[in-house]
Length: 199
Image (cartoon, rainbow, N blue to C red):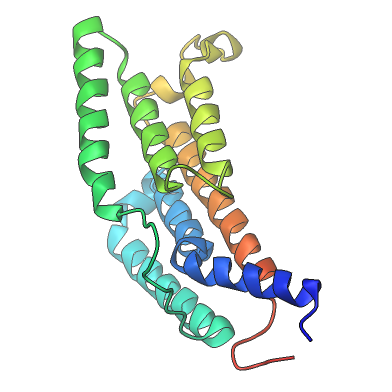
């Protein structure tokens, strides 16, 4: 006879495999490290080595997920969020933000921060069930972008408004890493056993 705890475990595994492709957060964390590394001028000058390192990192992440969880093929029945719908929505959002920035003469760092915030929110796949950290990160980025942080700096300039994109790239990269690690943690907790092991 199947107990309620076994049914709960099976339901958790069913939901995890359905979301497996979105929960492999180490890919997003690697992208965050890649983006954040562009904040440093010395690394930007040697971009070929950086791209090669990023490619090796992605291969290592792919091998880790394949070796730990095997190949997961989620069922395709039921409601799905079509990822291709994100592209026109993102382009429309970028167009609205850029148009508003040009019409209102908004500083450039506001435009960049708001575009990255829209990207973060969309990456969480609305309606963000179980992935509330994405809209939370987007809200944090909007707050950091619009807050008058210039009063805290010696120059009086907002850290994101500098000609060198150091702080904005580091902030967005760090948010991607944190969101990726949270997704990975959720995946590991929901599928704790290595591939091929059964109780």
